[in-house]
Amino acid sequence: MQVTAAKYSPGTGYFLSQLPWRSLLAELPSWQADGDKRENCMTSSLGLVGDLDDVDLIEDVEAAFGVRLGDDEIERCSTVGHLFELIEARLPDMPSGKSCATAMCFYRLRRALQPHSAIALKPKTSIAALETVPVRKLHEIIETECGLRPPEQIITLWGCLALLLVLALPFGLFAIGMPWWVALPSAAIGIGLYRLAPIQLPGEVEKFGDLVRIVASRSIGALAGQGARLGPKEAWQAFTDVLSDHTQLSKDEIGPETLLLAPKKVVA
Image (cartoon, rainbow, N blue to C red; front, side, top):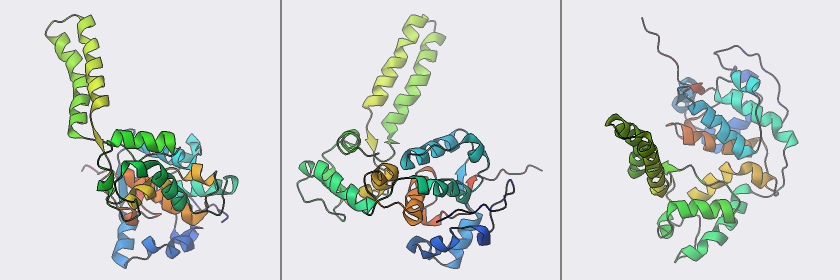
């Protein structure tokens, strides 16, 4: 699908009639929603505040598709549609085969994780079938044995406390008069506890198929290089999957007009 440049005005979105992928989105099952949901997409935002959370999102998208976006391009993005247009413009130069990325990911994950499950792993199998595998180990298997990107790490309460310890313990010891060579090494204790603290899968991962879908979306560029199909439709589905990790909006609530940054409140 060829991308055509639409008239851009800072702080505003493209008009729907100018979006080259409008017809594409209308065909997606997730976009065939009622009018209220579409209107919500047009007025919502991902809720990013610009305190490096936007940088984290861009890096996640780049890693998923295996591309590099220019700073000047990113600066012109104010909506999800703007950002997707940059990805779509690179599709002709990206490898693309005929296989389904999700199917490729399913067989690869099942081959690596089946030895850790007492029951056969199917798309509808509860993720509890892998409860004997620590999430850190699960991430390691997905990354090293499968060569794919695991889901985003969700830090547990213990992990948050360990991270707080990394910051607070050195300053606390220094404040009570301990020498720096005692205070600074204490940070290493906090870092060690943080690395040992358990992590958890995203709440939306309830079945093995959910895990497969997320990993496939986060690895879409790598899978395309190995024969997976990557057209505008597949790109949009993977793109919104990745974005949903960075917002409270569900995947179905993210549309082209969704703002990247939360609107700033005007103080009277």
